[in-house]
Image (cartoon, rainbow, N blue to C red; front, side, top):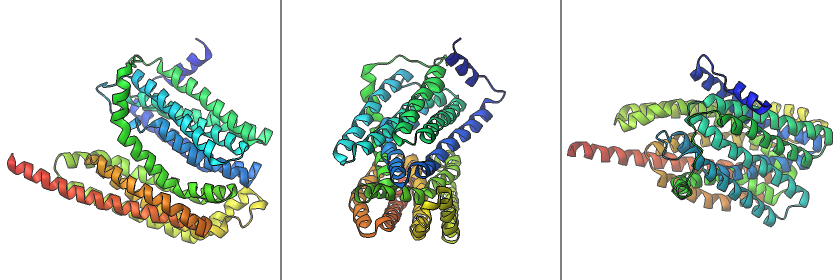
Length: 438
C-alpha cells in the first residue's frame, strides 16, 4: 500500500467500542475546529499587524464562512438522516461539486464589486477557497456519519484542522506574509481532504459512488429552504461585521472579531445543552405528551437563561481584566486597544445569550415541521439587519455594531419564541381535534 492508503487503514482501525470512539472523536474534532476559528486572529494580529489581522478576521470568520454555507447548502442534516438511501453518496458528491463552484463564483463576484485593494481581495479570496474546501469535506464527513463511522468525521475534522493551521502559522512566521500563509493553509486544507476523507471513504464497502444527473435537481429542492434559512441566519448574525467592513477600516474588523469571540463559546455551550434533549422533545411531541414536552422545554430554557445571565455577569466583572490580558498577548503596541471596548463586549455577550435562546426555539419549530415560519422570521430579520447594522455602525462605530448585534438577536429571539409558542398552541389544538375525530 502507498502512504495515503496506510494512513487510511490506520484511521479506520476498528476500536473495541465504536460508539465510545464516535463520541470521543466527535468532541475532539468539534473542539479543534471551534478553537482554531476563535484564536487564529491573535497570532495574525501579533505577527503582521492590526490591519492585516482585521482582513484575516473578516475573510475567515465572516465572508469565508458565508461562502462555506453556500457550499454546504444545509445538506448535512438531510444526508446523515437519509438512512433509507433515497440518494446515493455519488449524488451528494456531485451536488457538492456544484454548490462549491457556486460558492467560489459568488465569493469572486462579491470581491469584484467590493472595492477592495488587490492585496486584500487576494487574501480574502484565498480564505474563501479555504472555507469552500471545508464545505466540500463535509459531504465526506456526513457520509461517514450516515454509515455509522462518526469517529472518522471527528478524525477528519481534527487532522485537517491541525494540518492546515500548522501550515498557515509556519508560513506566516517564516515569511511574515499573510498572502503566502493563506495560500499554504488552503493547499494544506485540500491535502487534508484527500488524505483524511477521499482516500478513507474508498475503504468503506457500503458507500455507493454511482450517481444520476436527474437526482440533482430534486436534491436541491429538498434542501433549498434549509439552505436559505441557514444562509440568512448567518448573515443576520454577522451583519454587524459586514457593516464594520463596509464603513470602517480593517483594524476595526479585527478588534470587533476579538470582542465577538464569546459568542462562539456561548453557542458551543448551548449546543451541548440543547442537542441531547432534541430526541426526547421530538418523541414527546410526536407522542402527544405535551406536558412532558413543555416541562423539558421550560427546564432547558431556564438553564440557557441562567447560563446566559452568568456569562453577562462574568463579562461585566471580569471583562476588562480579560481584555487587558488579551492586549498583553497581542503585544505592547495594543495597550488600551481592547479594554476601551468593555461595554460593547458585555453587549455582545448578552446578544449571544439571546442567540442561544432563539436556537432552542428554532429546533422547536423544526420538530413542529414549521419551516415556512422559520424562513419568514429570517426574511423579516434580514431586511432589518440590512437597514439597522450599517446605520448603527455609522453612528456609533464598534459600540454601534455591538448595539446592532444585541438588538437583532433580541428581536430574532422574540420572533422565534413567539412563533414557536403560537405554533405549539395551534398544533396541540389540531391534534386534540384529531383525537376526538378518531
